[in-house]
Image 1 (cartoon, rainbow, N blue to C red):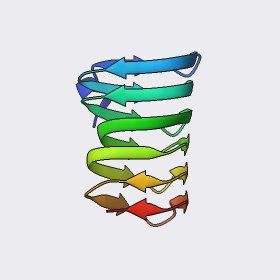
Image 2: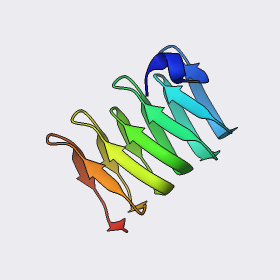
Image 3: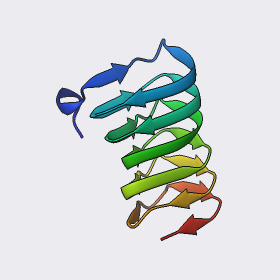
Image 4: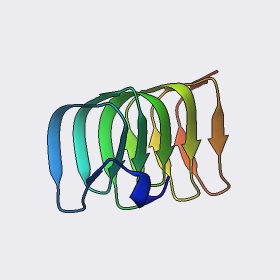
Length: 106
């Protein structure tokens, strides 16, 4: 997803703690800690760091995510992505170079 298509962007200088809910799309470049729930697409950029349990339609990880993930449609982990936690999704795409520690249920 390009930045132009992102409904909301959380920039590098933002640190958020708590429950984050959204409907369409969100791009994270900053640091989120807590819980993320959405009916849309979540993108974690290279500079993004997320320490949260995540429930979304689709997820693209190019940064760091620590927490359990449930995606209703798909999970993509890019070559710079690091995921620590359990994942549940009907589709999983992992690029060469990505790092994943945990269990995956499809």
